[in-house]
Length: 204
Length: 132
Image (cartoon, rainbow over all chains, first blue to last red; front, side, top):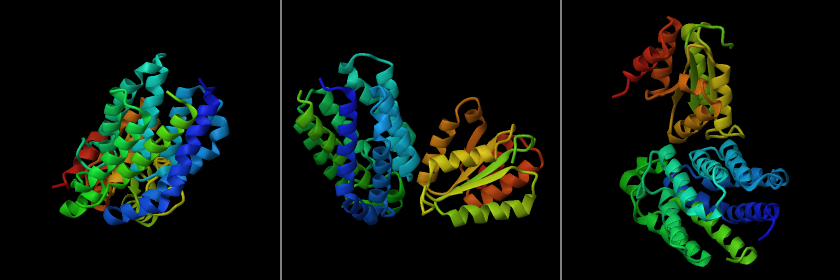
């Protein structure tokens, strides 16, 4: 098993670069059904996390995850900031409360439920939850990293057929149908980046 | 603004710094200095958007022992305000309420109510009567 500082630094860079490479794509998705800034907001957030990487790698893993969440809250803005922030803050807190890493699917479930409460959303509302719940399900079933990443991409694409029930996109009603949700898309990008990094550097 | 006043504080949150500041100006003109008042508008760079850290600072700036009523425009403003209230931490977080009311009318009528020394619950209820 790798030392945690290396793991934290690698995950941060994987997420930062995945968002940076797709900033324009995420903004284009957001232009279709939102206010067009999701890519820029996410990029600002992950650049801020990256700027803190040296300090974050010195922390115990749960503390690092929680602080990454808080940095996202303070820098992403929009609705994505508090949603991604809540996810990571809750993962950090839940991990700290346990010492068994095999509990991670339960930890993730609790964190996703917290995101759902924060956004007052459910699966099927065309949000990042439509990626998070299937990813958690795949994790629970001990799917391979590759399968989890594929599930995330597949689930993000399914949001195209959904009608937005929350956020700016919900004001569009039926006109939101036919577009992939930007939050679901960034969530799939991050999931894929994390799975790829772990697959290459931290084999199961 | 300090916590010395007995009146409920008012916080305006908008995606637009111009809107937030403009409404705060209106409220100030209505009630003068007797209501603690602060605004947060825009993201961390001052562009259109919302900023949980900025909202937290606004709540602290408008803090009153009687509590604080927060007025928001669109979804992200509400979600970030909830996050900011959580970051404020207990026991103060229990004395901050996000009002389900129109931003301009809600803030003005709430400030008028607050200026008369009404409780947080009364201030919130008066503003929320404006909602359909």
